[in-house]
Each structure stands twice: as C-alpha cells, then as structure tokens.
Image 1: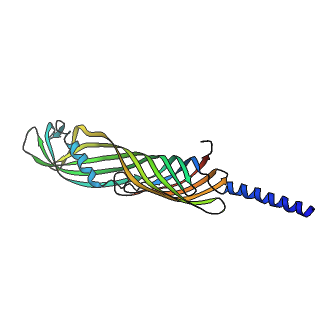
Image 2: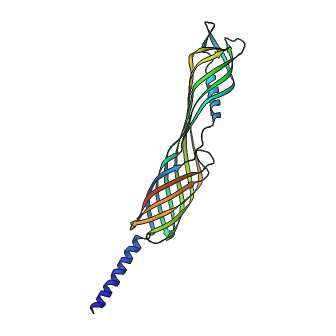
Image 3: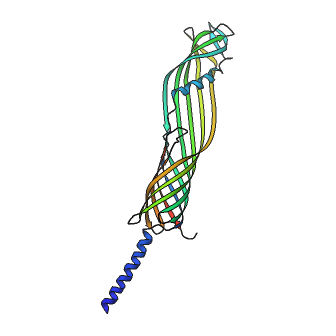
Length: 284
C-alpha cells in the first residue's frame, strides 16, 4: 500500500513537472509584444571627389564684385570662370554602423506561424568629406580682357546626415526545438522613411594668383548651403534567429535582419543584428 502511494505521488509529480516544463519551453498562441536593440550596417557609400566640382562652381559665382590688388591698385573682379579643378587633398569620412531599436506587436495563430507588425528607428548615418583644391580660372578685371588665374580653396567640406525610420509587416515561421528553444524566420515588407540633410560649406578662398602674383580677395569668398530631402519606399525584408523561453510566456530573441536594396538611396543592403525580449499577452 505504501509503495502504491509513493508510485501515485511520483506519477502526479512527474505530470505536474511536465506541465511546467511544457509551459516554460513552448510559446503560447495569441498576442505578444516585444522590444529589440542592436546595430545596423547601412553600407552607405563614401562621397566621391566629383562632389567638389558643383560646390566650387557655385562659390566661384559669388566672387565677381570682390576686389583684388594689381600693381598696388584695387581692381574689381567682373567675371570668373572655372576651367579645371585640381584636388590637392581629400579626406572621406563615413559613419554607417548605427544603433537601432525596434518595437513590435504580433499574433501567433498556429504553433508554427505568427504575423508581426514592427516600428524601427535607426540612429543618424553620416557621410562627409574635407578637401582643398586649386582651380584654373579665366578672370576679368573691371571688364578687361579675360586672363588666366589660379584660385586656391583651402577648405571645402560637405556633411550628409541621414535619419531613417521603418514600419514592417512580416510573417514569422517557427520551428519548436527542445529546452525552450525555437528557431524562426520572418519574411515580409518594410516601408523605409528617409530624411537626408546636406550641409556644404566652402571657406578659406582669400587669395588668387594673377600672372604669377598672389593677390588678396576682398571680401574673402565663402559659400554655405543646406539641402533637405525626404523619401519613403517599400523594400523586402527577411530575418532569421532564435527564441529562448527563460520563463513561461517570456522569451529572449536573437536575430539577423536584412532589408534588401537600400542604403542611403544606393543599391546596397542594410543588416540589423539585434537582441530583444517579448512577452505573450494572455489577457487579450
């Protein structure tokens, strides 16, 4: 009799333990909510040296009306044309690995299938350069005949700042494993909203060489402009990863997401490596 009671107690204990283990190591069908954080490689491309040219031609247009000293006399620049540009230095700087955060809400309607809606914020990506150059110009003074001259640009800088947000809708396929582990893949689309600001500043144009003689430009020429652009487009996205249920209805998620076909307007991809946590909401 005693042995039968012990056997019954052991059976009930094993059943209870199995129930706890099942709730701990398996996701619940229904609604869930979560948060992720990580870093995205936007794969943004460097700015090319050719970007110096359009910036400089606009600066050159501001120089007519300035004065220079020729044979100890002040002479007004009436026109200035650009023939060629020699880039003497060019330093490119890119920041394309940015912190990224994502909030998501989903519904698991089968043991191996869910649908998920997410919002992602990417911290600012930046592209910039600092350059100096010499320009071969055609110069006219007080409406005189054009003559060759050389204009030195000591500081030519550009900075592009790109801020991106995304809204995604994906289907999540789930492969349950042992010990609270699920493998998953998410496939769907993402609407990527991009805001770009370009700041161009050219300064340090204070001298021009005429017939081999350097002369000061008064006032020194400078140019600054800011351009803003906004765009939104839908791209395909895919995520692969692993979920680990460390307590009932709450899991740690590790994933690698790719948004294909975009990185700051280019044809590259964006790769998001993330870690997060989500909770199954049984009350809904």
